[in-house]
Length: 325
Length: 137
Image 1 (cartoon, rainbow over the protein chains, first blue to last red):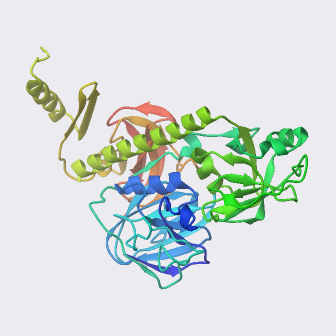
Image 2 (cartoon, rainbow over the protein chains, first blue to last red):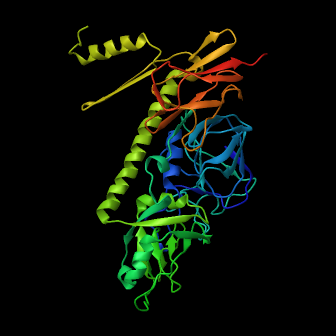
Image 3 (spheres, chains in turn blue, yellow):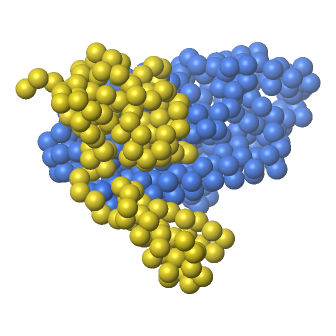
């Protein structure tokens, strides 16, 4: 249903991720901002985990080959459909031949999500349609999208237009002293760091360096000091784990992380906050808030409640539009 | 008017009340479940809710209850200001209902004359929101 006309690179097909295959050495992949991906799908009446396009570099230009609809969420980009400026986090009707240009993010965020009716029709591999770049499978032929690619959709009764959602960054905000923040559970080797380092980790603001991508974020700040040298065998890790290499500058594992590693683990960003990191641009700063298991579960429940409410209200908006059409 | 005890009669009564309005959807949630009544009308609601305030101007009205915002919550400032030229279909504001943002679109090409409701005001169905002067043909 769409043809990619121009892309600077790094755009891939993603869903909510590939779970249950870590034992085979297959990482989860999936959208960096899971809330934005789910919201884009809900706006269209899709299942929240339908495969969509994750756009990381701009401008990204597509042409629609059939009449239909699309939803665009995530970073608030300078997006234009047939030359006309679009409101963010909304569903839009489209005509065959229309061109959509997703331009630079203008008001925060760094990744945009383009959802299409029924989701993108690519094969499900190990239970997911996400692109697994390391393995070269999933998504469209296991690779980054290129100009000339055609993406088919499953289609469906996606109706409605003229409505959107208030982004969760506004309704579930989390900041410390004006800096975006995420909650972290101390991990197994937390006790291997000096008390001063542990305090500095929570008190400091950390820069997301240019060596940050879908695999992981390398941070820069006050180096974390080990009480004594720690040597470990490789062991299982998941997205969100904060590892500390000998340099003392932490690395947060992100969605394309490999499923094992040997660096000591300082903490783990709770699953309910990973979407916030997914919108943190290179060069920006992030703060960490120490949390507990119970608080992490409560945060997860808040995310679920947001998605349930978004599903209910978008359903209502579609039936409003359907009744009026 | 007596509220009937029979649920079927209750639905019928709600339907008769709806018939006298321009409301296209009523959703009622109680401990027992959710009732949703929808009604077909002509044209898309946002564009049908307009009226000629003066021969050459058009007032755009709310097609739902909600909180009227002149701009989008992610963006600074109003989407349009007096004197701006707008094309039919262009967003001129949003109505917020919880997490939902209903786009208010210009029904015709025109020039924005004035906002008729303040930014952030809660409005009822049919409340006038913005006046457009029709663009000379």
